[in-house]
Structure formats: C-alpha cells, structure tokens
Length: 294
Image 1 (cartoon, rainbow, N blue to C red):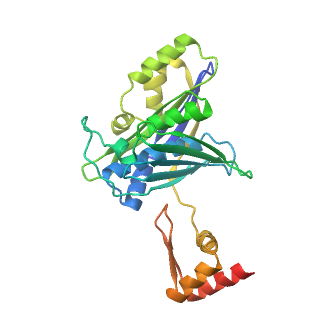
Image 2: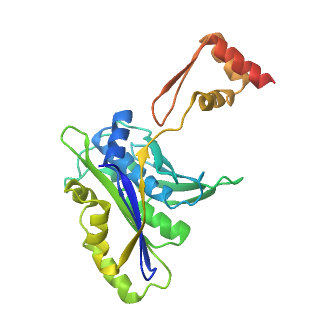
Image 3: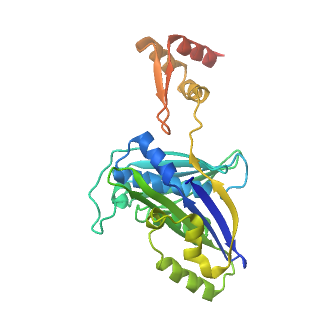
C-alpha cells in the first residue's frame, strides 16, 4: 500500500485532522541511514510529522523543516517536506541504541533528551522564512510537537506519531496524525474529543492491523460528521544534485578550495539526506576556484 496523508474537517468547522500512513517512507529512510531501532523510531516520527506539516502548506514551492536538538545521544534530527508530498531527513547519530523502556517501548525520549529545542522553519519563498521554536518536553517528539503548536503558534493540537519495528529491525508499521481544534468549538464537543483522544490506541499498532487513514478517521472521529477534503501520496525523495553540492563547495571559499586541491587533489561530498557521494577531481576543483575568483 502506498503511503499517503488524508486531510479532513468536520461539517461544523470545529476540528481539522491530518492522518498519515508512512510505513514505506520510514523503511526507506531506515535502509538509507542504516539506523538502529531507536534511531529508526526517532527519525520515523519526525519524518511522519514533516510529511503531515508539508500538506498544511499552500504554495507550490513552500517547504517546512522540523529540527530537533536535544541533549540525548541522538544529537539532532532534521526532516524537510514540501507541499507536494516529498520528504527527506536524517538523524545525526543513526547508531544510537538504548535499552527498552519499562513498558517495553523504544526509548526515543532518552535518545533525543528532554533538554533542548524543537524548531519549525516554514519557507514560503520570501526573503526571510518563518521560524518558530519551543523547548522539548519529553523528547518523544509527538508531545514536543503538540507543545510547539500551543506555545509558538497558539494552536491547540493533539499529535500522535508511531513507528513499530519488526524482529529483523525493518519497519513493520508507521504513521501519525495531527488534530487541531478551531476557534469557537463548543465545550461539549471539546470534552467528547478529549475523551476520544485519551482512549485512542497506538496508531502504529492500528496500521499494523491493516487500518488505513480512513479507518483511523472513523475510529477516532466517527461521531463528528467528518468530511475528507484531500488525499495526497507521500514519499521519501531527496532533491540533491551535483550542482547543489558544487554550490556548497564554492561556499567554503577560494582559500579552503585551494587547500583541498593542494593537499588532496580531489574532494568527496556526501549528501546528509540520501548518502549519495559526489566526486570532484582536480579539474573540477580548478574550475570551482576559477568561478570563485570571477
């Protein structure tokens, strides 16, 4: 089954929800970055959140980045998504591995750490991107993102993100939702909604049972007369290119490029997001140095 995000709103316009199924996307990321179970869960949750938030964007060229920097051994996680459903990301320490929590779940909170920040950067193609941030609460990512929405965007939100790992370390199931209450929601609807969210089961376990986003919508918000507005396929895709990596080399400056040329006679640049290696030989470096001089 292909990964996708579903967007729905109730007829009264009190609640909007985005639900994602991301099993393939997270498994692709695991293969690229050769992550441990804990790192797969941390990166997978962040990629799922980015995929959903990418679909909240309106413009063709709009992009959103989620950057999580905690004091845990995972160090930092970055995920970038656009409005077309393309997502990429990486974790600074893909080999972080910790004992399971007492409840038998992967210890993402300890891997990320509780002290640090979650930053959300929305690039609308203007001179300056919109940057919002808040402190980490648990390091479990979903709770941290819910806190971010309230603190930085004054938008009450419920966030669920889950990654289920198989015995062979592959991704068994992954997905998530971001539910937001809109202004003027009646108190009784809010109480009923809170009850539903509190009793909701693990999203990754539901997806593992074969639930699609539509089934999860029905399970969670079946009493609220929801209307599906959009379904968008999402996938892991890097947009790196040799030209972009050339620009990165040029940005280090003439002095540093000359030093690389004299000491090594070549350069290898690796894309963080997809691990593609780009080779630049002596002639390439000479051309880049010449372009810096112009």
